[in-house]
Image 1 (cartoon, rainbow, N blue to C red):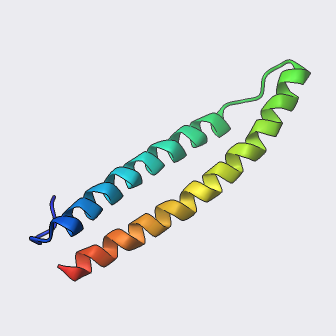
Image 2 (cartoon, rainbow, N blue to C red):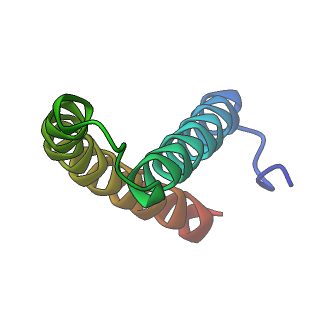
Length: 81
């Protein structure tokens, strides 16, 4: 759905925000899948997985914060119509 505005800059901004929102949602879904998997049987692999989990959790935190900001900006654009 395209905003009911004739301002091409607002239309472009909304399009970019929607694309970014979708990319962030996809990234978060992939992170959740990775985190939902079990640990390997090998202890060395488990240690690596646990280190990776910390990194994934931080990436998820940052992505969630960015997603919230994108959604806030989209809501503001809807109110400008």
